[in-house]
Amino acid sequence: MNLKFIYKIINIDELKKAKSSGTYSGSSKDIQDGYIHFSGEDQVEGTLKKYYANQKDLVLLKVETLKLDHLIWEQASDGNMFPHLYSPLNLSNVTDEFEILLQDDGSHKLPDSY
Image (cartoon, rainbow, N blue to C red; front, side):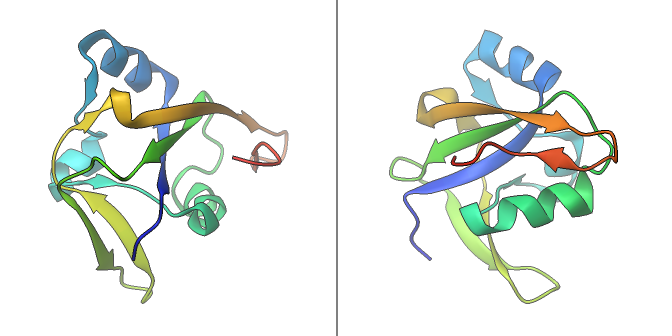
């Protein structure tokens, strides 16, 4: 697959830590799996529902794929293809950040466009 942008859901504290170093090595789940999990634009909502229900303080990073040398699209157990980055993410590839709002029912509100 060849998308111009991919997306990473990240906790605000993880993002602050990454900004201090300029790179993001991934969440504990990413590190355990050996790569950083990303989503295509049409996969963000499903990823939020499946892995981040009721979690607050989340940010959506929009990442330009052009300069990501170790990005591989791999098939998940559900048959969908997901982007995985097999190296730390240089934050210079992040083109935008979006706050993800936690609603009273535990679901999340994304911006209208991202």
